[in-house]
Amino acid sequence: MVESNVPLRYATVAAKVILGVGFLVFGANGFLHFLPLPPPADASAQSFLGTLDSTGYMKVVKALEMIGGGLILGGRLAPLGLLILGSIVINILLYDLFMDPKGLPIGGFFGVLIVFLAYRHKEHFAPFLKPRREHCTFKGN
Image 1 (tube, rainbow, N blue to C red):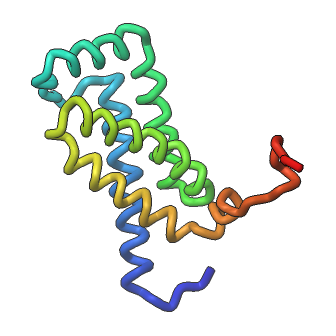
Image 2 (cartoon, rainbow, N blue to C red):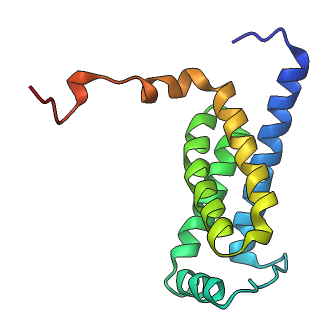
């Protein structure tokens, strides 16, 4: 796709770099612990995160964050990276909304970047949004 709108091209590249590097760094931090993160203020949020961490669930999430960030930075498989990170960002936003609202600005920022990049790659996501009766398991009458 040849783009004549130069500012939009730059915004797309900036969004990919911010999102990709952000998730690479935060994903790696889950393994290497080089960035101190404040504990959640709420006891239920602490319990929830403690359970996720003790089961190894967060290691998988952090690995997926790094994979998704790398795919977005790599470029060729950016839509796959957006699918991976999109589901993670939804879960981050739900956690922030219901358990620890102080993280909403960052989660919201990453959410906006994902939506923007998904729109910029809309040709890759359009088939998911097109209803197809032949693929439906319940056809009715």
